[in-house]
Image 1 (cartoon, rainbow, N blue to C red):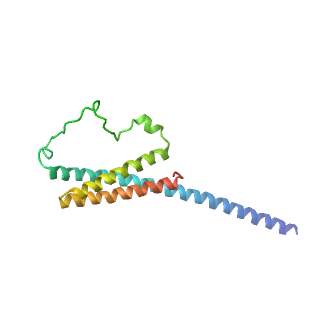
Image 2: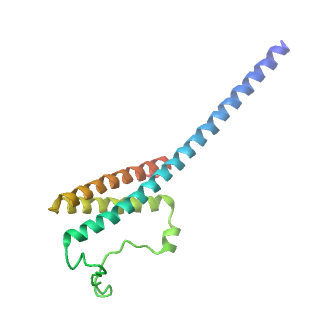
Image 3: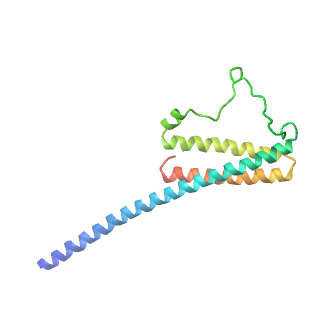
Length: 157
C-alpha cells in the first residue's frame, strides 16, 4: 500500500512538473512570437523607408521643374505665423510614453498617411507613379496589420 502512495505522489509530481513546464514553454513561445513580430515590423518599416525614397524621386520627376531641379529646396512657411501640424514629438516626451501609447500613436499616424497616399494615388495621372504609390499603400496596410498584431499580442487595446 505504501508503494502505491509513493507511485501516486511521483506521478502527481511529474504531472505538476509537466504542466509547469508547458506553461513556461507556452510563455517562451509567446515571447518568441512577439520578438519575431517586432523584428518583422521593424524590417517592414525599413523597406517602406527605402520605397518612399524611390517614390520621392519619381514624384519630383513627375512634378517637373523647379521641383525636379537638383538642389531644389521649397520655401518653408514661418511656423510662428501658421499653425502647421507636426509629425515630430520631442524625444523626452516620446520616451516617457508607455509602449501601448507609442504603438497607438504610430497606428494613428500610419492610418492617416495611408489615407493621404491613397488619395494622392487616385489623383495622379502618371501610371508608374500611381502603381508605386499603390504598392506603398500595400506595405502601409501590412505595417498597420503588424502594429495591430503587436498590440493584441502585448495586451493593448
